[in-house]
Length: 387
Image 1 (cartoon, rainbow, N blue to C red):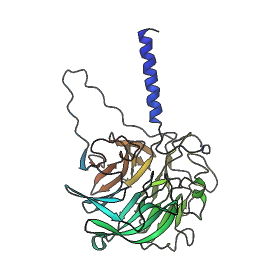
Image 2: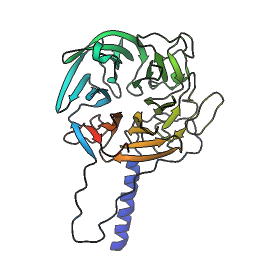
Image 3: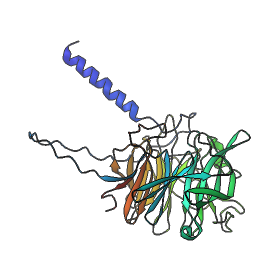
Image 4: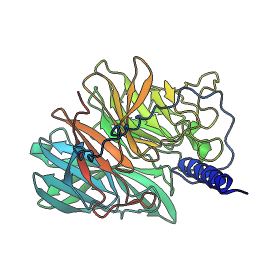
C-alpha cells in the first residue's frame, strides 16, 4: 500500500473512533428497550469558526464568553438564589454558599445519611419562599435503609454555616445507583413539584401505587393537595424514566426534560409538556411511538443522546437546558420546535438558572463521567445568552 493510501486508511479509522466515542451514553447500558418510531429533528450544533484568511498575523485571543464565580466544587447538582447570593448543592452532602468573592462550604446534618452511589446523593435543594425570615429550605437526597436504596424529601434550616434537618416530608421513594430523579421546583400554583426516576425498575413508572418514575406534587408542609389528579396520592404525572428539568412558561405551561433509553437504540431524550394525570409512556413507548392513553414528547433528540439535566425559561419563553452527554447549553423554542446550542466547550453541564437577567450554569465534570480540569467544577455566569 502506498504512503497516500496508508494515510487515507489511518484517517478513516480515526474518524470512526471519534464517532464511536461521541455515541457514549450518560448512563449504564440497559436491557433491550421497545422499538421506537422514526426520530424527529436532531439538535443543531454551533458551526465551527472559520480561518483567518491566510494572513501571517495571529488571530486575537477570543473574549471568554463567561465569568467564573466559584470553582473546585465537588460534584455540584443544583443552583439556587437568595437575592445575589448563590447556593449550590453538592452530591456528597454539602451546600456551597457563594456571596460575591466569598465561597463557604456548609455542612448538612441529616437524620438519615446521604448515600452517594452512582447518580444518587444530596440532589435537589430549594430555598423556602420565605427563606429570608425562616432560613428554611427543601432538599431531596438518597439514603439506605435495611439494605435498600431510597430517596426522601426533607425540610432544612440554616444555622450559621450549617444546615440541620427540621423534619421529613416524604420518605421511601424508590432509589437505585441510577435514575433517582431529584429535581424540585415551585409551580405557578405555589406548590412543590418533585421528579423521581424509575430506580432502574422500569415497570414502576407505570405503577400508580409506586412513587418511582413520577412527577410528584405536594403542599409546602408535605400534604397531598386536594386537587391532585389521583385522590390521596402525591402523583401528578407518571410514565417517566428519569425526569430532570422542571420549568414553566409565562402562560403556565409545564415543560420537563427527560433522559431517553440507554443502549441500542439510545438517545430519544425528551421534552414533555406535562398535564395533570398524564401518562408519558415509559417504558412502553418513547420517541414518536404512540399508544392509546399515553402522551408523546413535544421534542426528542432521535438517536442522539444529550442527557438533559436542569432547565429554566428565558425572557422569550424559550427553554434553556443544561446537558451532560451533550456537554452544552441548549435552547428550545416551543413555538418553532427548534433546538440549538448556545454555549459549549466547558464539558458536562448539570444545571442552569437565570437571576436578574443573567444566565448561570454549573459544570459537572467531577462526577466520574467527565474529564475534569484543574479548577473543576465551576459556577459560570454566561455573557450574551439571554439577549
